[in-house]
Amino acid sequence: MTTTHAGTEVTAHEVVAAGSPMLTRLADERATGAFLRAQGILYLAEGRIVHAESPSAPGLEVLLTVGGALPAQGWQEALTRAGARHEVGRDLVGSGRVSAGELELCHLGALFDAAFFVLGPASGPTHFRYGVTHWFGQVHPVPVAAVEREARRRRALLDSVWPCADVDTAPVVPRTPASDQTVTGRQRALLRLADGVRTPTAIAWALGRPTFHTLVEIRRMAAAGLVEPPRARVPAAARTVPGPLDCDEPNIALLRRLRDALEESL
Amino acid sequence: MPGIDECLLEAMTLPGARGAAIVDWTSGLALGSVGDSPNRDHEATAAETAEVARSAAEYRAFADVHDPFGSCTAADEAWGTDGTAAVEDTAADGTSRKGLPVEDLMLSTRNGFHVIRFVRTTFDSSVFLYLWLDRHTGNLALARMRLRDLSERLVLL
Image (cartoon, rainbow over all chains, first blue to last red; front, side, top):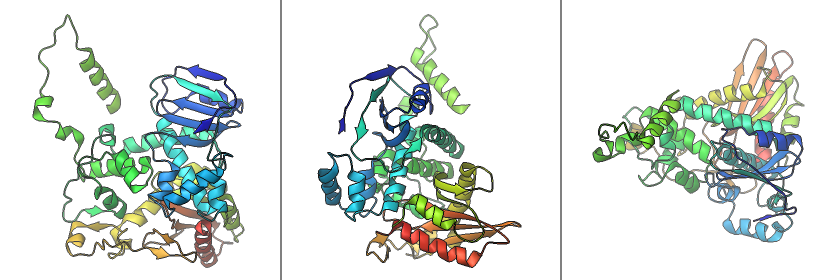
């Protein structure tokens, strides 16, 4: 639900993790519009990030209704009343549904969560559509540099907890904790939803908790042995080593996987 | 009902206040900060205080075994102290809030006081208020009470 005021669009092909020369330039020129990638959208207003959305991160609606005390109907009413004039956030506070402080905390949490995925390793082109604004309205604009720095720090934090990213996307399979092993309250809430089918992202949605926060817990539990590492779950047949390489025709897919694994372990 | 900035500026009016921040302890992100910070870098201070806050929030020594949001072991659960029925607080505005058993942390150093106050929100969060005070001009008891008040007013409707 976005509106385009100006049709101008810029496209760039970038493969940069947690940083983008295009985004820096847009911040410098105090641009307003939508920064679009396959992983999500960053909304800029006068060069600062005011909103972020990603299919990998639950939006404010989920955080406030599933994870919070806002009835879904309350959200819908605010959307109907104030969506067209791009003041949904202001309406939620004005109508007494959400306190100003909670809205700021929750909105910033959602912004940094979605931005982490938007600024992740890029696949495909990046577009910028000038003049586009988001219907939620501005809550707490954040400088582009701060968001990029935070995205880099978050990636490093995840890797320092547990360096294998495969737990981020695989279905979560709990392991029985040792009798004296501590499981935190937040981890137990997460494990209660781990049915061997739900991925960390699906659990984040079901809890109404930011995906990054769920990933941190999943990686900590992987390190503590509270969840199964995905590699151990691959069926024996799939784990068999491929036959001798035909040197005339190198197995490109295998080489790519090896390279990725080596880069990941660096 | 103040926002983040108003809340931090009010914390800075306390005697001896040198810096304040609102920090998310899962990510270590400062959602807002004012004044100075002990590291001369609010982001680094936020990441470090977040680790301290997380330890306090998660260690069983500071958990209430009857609290469904607290840490426990398989042995605790076997004894039925998990308390699967959700216990939530009802605040002055009639809304229930999710919270930890631990309320605040006070840490004294040779030159300063550091106060961490956990914020109870209606949504799933891991946020605390942080205040850095001068050791000689700061009033720890007053700061603790004011932070409690601020942490409640920040989320009050």
